[in-house]
Image (cartoon, rainbow, N blue to C red):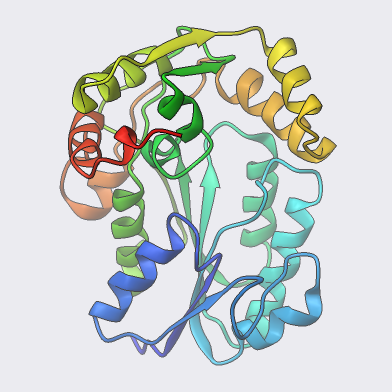
Length: 276
């Protein structure tokens, strides 16, 4: 299989940056594309799409803010068509588990006539160290509307390894994989492991979803983001995604990284010891 440039839509994100580094190490030309790169890519400005895709043999695609939003499915379908017209032969899409909007987006990709690989990922480990949960952990208390429903958190390093394999190995084309960690934990258990690994007292509190949404609204978050948070904490975390899946091992031939390994290695960097 001839590989030229690989475009990475969302090339500066949690997974995109990791994938870019892995591909560069293999000597593959990478074109990260986001609102802050050259060429620029903006999901809401379709005039930026062609230049980001032109000349690429394949693309890794992440959507912002999330595939659950109402306009995501049409945008993914349009991007897939644009990619096909630009000569892109294969798209690897980062999708989500248990999201109706994500399913519609996957269908739009598959209907576009370009080879695809869909990676349905569970919640990332790195949300605790590179995302929205960091402030609470640093302050010693994370409060979320997530109770005793376990989630098989997946590591972004595993997602990146899997995506690279799918981009360079044609055996993964036109397939859908579900990527999870090797065991499911509640948010309380995850925070407890982080507290133990970092040697800090960190509490976890389950709060009512309405109170959480009201607090986020008071912070001035856009309504689209508010709606997304409500769906994530009511629909996606209702237990449908608790089962552990073997997508990582199917692609990579090894077990997915355990949350305790992530917590220990991340704690060793000192990132959870920095006081706000």
